[in-house]
Amino acid sequence: MARSQASSWHAAAPARRARRLAALTRAAQTALLYALLIVVLVAMAIPFAYMVAGSFKTNTELFGNALALLPTAPTVRNYIDLLNGSQIPYLRQLANSAIVGTGTTLLTLAVSSLTGYGFAKFDFRFKRVLFIIVLATLMVPAQITLVPLFLLMHAFGWLDSLKALIIPASFNAFGVFFMRQSMLAVPKELLEAARIDGASEFRLFWRIALPLTRAGLTVLGILTFLNAWNDFLWPIIVLQNDVNMTVSVGLANLNGLYHVRYGMIDAGAFLSTVPIIVAFLLLRNQFMSGLTAGALKGA
Image (tube, rainbow, N blue to C red):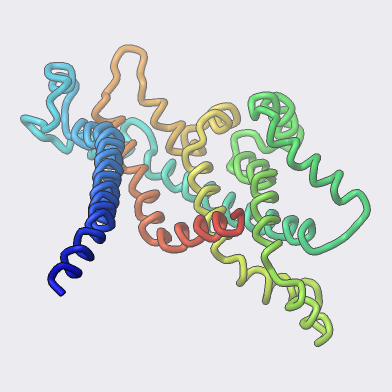
C-alpha cells in the first residue's frame, strides 16, 4: 500500500511542477503588465502634474527651477487674473466651448444615427457605392478641405460665429460608419414585428433602434465632444473676435509679443480639462461598455 502511494505521488510530481510553473508564469505576466501600466500612467500624469503645479507659480519661479514640481511660494494670482477677464474673456470662451461641444455632439448623434440606420436597415439603389464614397472621405486630410470650407462659410455669412464650428463638424463619415456598425446589431426580426403592428419607420428608429444602440451613441458622443472641445485649427481660422472664440483659441492669445504669463496659461489649460474629466467620470461605465460591445461584435 505504501509502495503504491509513493509511486502515485512520484507520478503526480511532474503535473504539480507544471501547475506551479504555470502559476508562476501567470503571476510574472500580471506583474509585468501592471509595471508597464504604471510606467505609462506616470508618463502621462507627469505633464498634467506640472501643468497644475505651474498654475500656482510665477514666471520667475517657473524658469528659476524648471524641474521643481511643488511651488515654493504658491499664488492664485494666475486664476484671479484669468477669471476676471483682464487678459481674455475666459469664462465667455469656456461657455463658447461648451456650446460648440454640446451642439456638435447632439447634431452629430442625430445625423449619424439616422444615416447609419438607413445604410444598415434599408436596401436602395447605389447603396454600396454611396457607402464606399462615405468611407473614402475618411482618407481625405482635413487640411485639404479648409480653403473650400472657409469660402463656403464666407458665402453663408457664418464667419466669426459658432455656427461655423458646429454645423460643418456635425457631418462626418466616422460617425456614419460607427453608427451603421452599431445599427447592424439591431435584430431585423424585431423591426419586422413592429412593422406588422403598424409602427412607422421613424418610430422603429426612435423606440427600438436607438435604445438598443445606446452604448454606441455614448461612445460616439464622448469622442465627438472631446474632438469639438479640443479643436484648434479650424476655430483659429474662422473666429476673429475674442468674445466668440473657444477656450483653445483664447489660451493661444495669451502668448503676448513681449511678455507671456505661462502660469496663467497653465491655469486656463487646467480649468479647461475639468469639464472633460467630469464628463468622463459620469459616463465612464457607458463608454467602457460601448467599447466592449464593439469589440465583441467585431470578434
